[in-house]
Image (cartoon, rainbow, N blue to C red; front, side, top):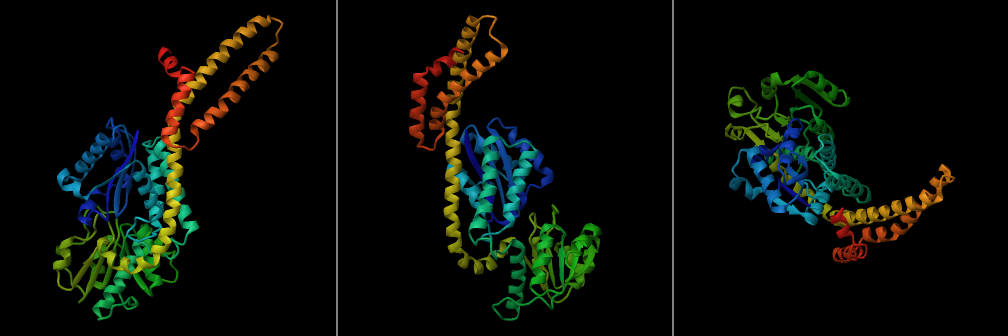
Length: 436
């Protein structure tokens, strides 16, 4: 068995590629079933966010297993493998384990130490369990990755003051406002007429950060008014005007700054829509949705500036240096967690031999017990029979305890393999297994 991860992220692929490989929660079941349909894939789980798509697998053969995942990604995205391949990364075994730990800890995020990725890894575990695509190996790995992410955030300051994608988007708006005024600094958004499209988790975070940056009024636009009003009720100190997505045109005409974060599969704002509106002299559109909510052709509209998640790097770079030292502390914790998982996984190599050894001794115990009981005659009570049987089981367990503990103890793989060969030879376990 072999652990492998195949994926792409903001580091390897632009948003126009990533949006073609965004797998929604509604389609996750179909995707998992298709992947498990390959005879090479034993266990699988999918992590899909605005900045990455990663498929974690336990496969029979590393080459054939990865090839099956690559074929799935090509079919799902509609991109030929030769077009998609340059944007994909693949990690195997120890490297795959370390990569997952880094992702869960926020060390591989666009925003170093981002907290939202941990909840997304938790969601990956939940979906894998619900759709029964996880087995004992990946389930152990993924749950340990979640606990590792929590540990990094509790034992270091990596999560303290860490910006999220949403806060980076708000800072980008501040930065662009400053640049338009000839200043290389973050400006207050107090005078901006702001709209947020989407009342989900990202919409909530946008409202939090807009409030923190001095914004006093926001138009919250959503497909259903009820959800928008429920979210607005949580922000008593922010004036939130709720509006339906069907009124988007009127809102765009009023606003100078618009953030979009919806689960729409296709753009909800494009050039043809804006050309038919009476816009203010300046309109900034910041899209943190993947797939993108704003079409690339809006850049052709005079007075309109459009930015997507890939443009956040300008803001992120300003915050990275101060966090590098903390990130190095976190790397030490990750190495320890990786070692613990790999030691556990290596110990599974001993399980078949341990099971054979236990079965061999149990067969001897049962045979000898039956001989002894038959010699005791009918006067031997049921209670006495139970005592003798318990005694025989206790002896076998005591005999097994030390060799089982030693075989499963952390050690070099070569040393364990040598110990397994010795045990198998002494007890003739391989031959007994073949004869049985």
